[in-house]
Length: 139
Image (cartoon, rainbow, N blue to C red; front, top):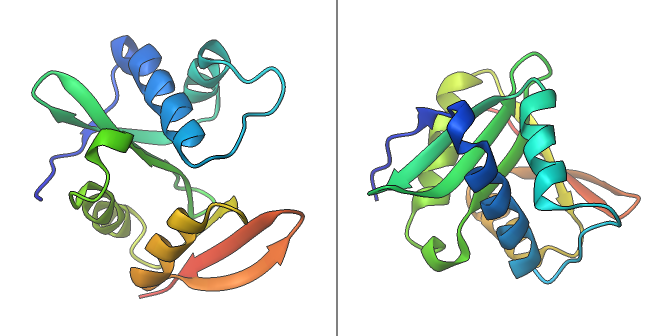
């Protein structure tokens, strides 16, 4: 599937935060105490990430957040109903254009679906520490 990531607009923060919240819960993991859609919306504003969204018609179906300065793929989430359609792969390819020298990411060690996805897409497991799996991509 071809996607056209676009920069997030202020009006999109709430919808993206809801997508983030729902997608995270679909992994089977629980949110920490105090994590709400409002909290995630504030993080989208405050973190200083470059954030891109993917729309299908008028609905936001995925987002990508990059910390360019630290070369970190901070967040990548696809609506559960749109997973498996190639959107995540396309967003990873887009991320590589933004950080062509390489990047790192971390995910919950128990998020086996995400871990399989990253490994299938050529990311290398760097380490497992404190319940997190750390991955690295190098060209």
